[in-house]
Image (cartoon, rainbow, N blue to C red; front, side):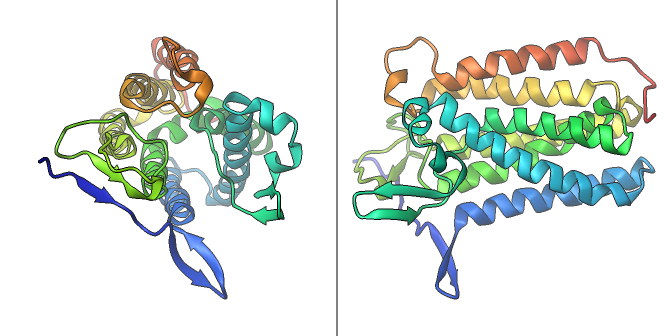
Length: 274
């Protein structure tokens, strides 16, 4: 009889005035806080005025959230959400008993990337900081934030892996299961921390390459190459993916890997702020 890890955490961390605060929300907050602190260090090192710091935080917060939400709704469940557009934007869902606050059940990392790029474009136009310079800075710090978000998925017992007999397999009891699965969320979280360390080490060795596209490209290539392969041991998120050679996560990862490689190949030294 194999011993597996029984995983059944309470998705709610605590309550504030009767309102439940979920672990997933706390992980998102941790991701944003880590991104803010790391960006603050980068701005200081690169002699960028800190008055621009709060602006990028606000731009990215709303754009990543909106992009991630729309990405999930349009990539994974277009049939449902196009006929329930209100639920696309508001954290509510309609049941037979009426409307209920459920939070944003479904966020796509690919959609979040598209949202972030759009936010950075707007931010660059407003501040005068070069677009590619901001993209490179985001490429340095994004993997660590992504690691926190995957931990949130683990606490929610979502985006699970395929069944396994490995001793580190998780039995996701909150999903009503009695067999072990690969903890795909944990694999991704660990991988993103490793990628963060790799990019940080490269940055410390070549700080002047910020603004060339190197770090943006490195981030996209490493994260989504790993994402492409980890999908082979993850359960399909939607029924329509069953039987397909590649699932939606892999299909969406391919163009981002291509953009990442292109960005690295065409990066040049010595390009900074305007």
